Image (cartoon, rainbow, N blue to C red; front, side, top):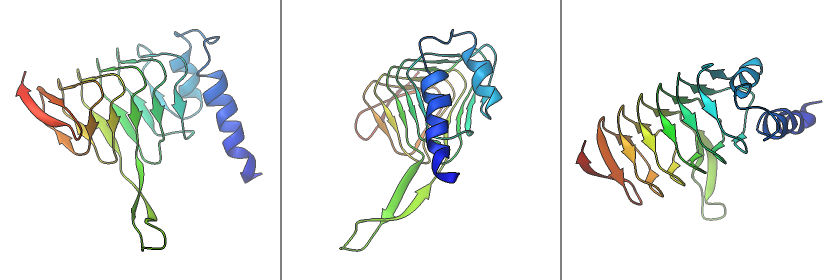
Length: 165
């Protein structure tokens, strides 16, 4: 039975809930039924991938754009009034550095937090343990590997502080 859980998850969360056929207004309700904590006024566009039955929390009036990826090995929290661009990746899972015979060692997980009012630009990547402070902008295509302080602009690979906002 356990071997079918990923198939069932992908059918329910990634085919039905993420489908363009499910009206945007119903998506938060539908995802909440299956264990995610999605505010009723949040908006999640179609074609997002959810890697677990639970672990995603999205605050009121936040917007998640098309094609985002949430692996959800650990909790991902998105605050109120936050905006997430197209195809942003939220990677909570990684590996420790292994031996020379297999460099991908033991699995590791860390949560990700995006603060209230933040904006994460299209095709950015948030790595395990990333924190985007309240009111912060992460420029499109950036890779966040740590903590982005509040009300600041971060850009680049890896994302670096550009200026206060």
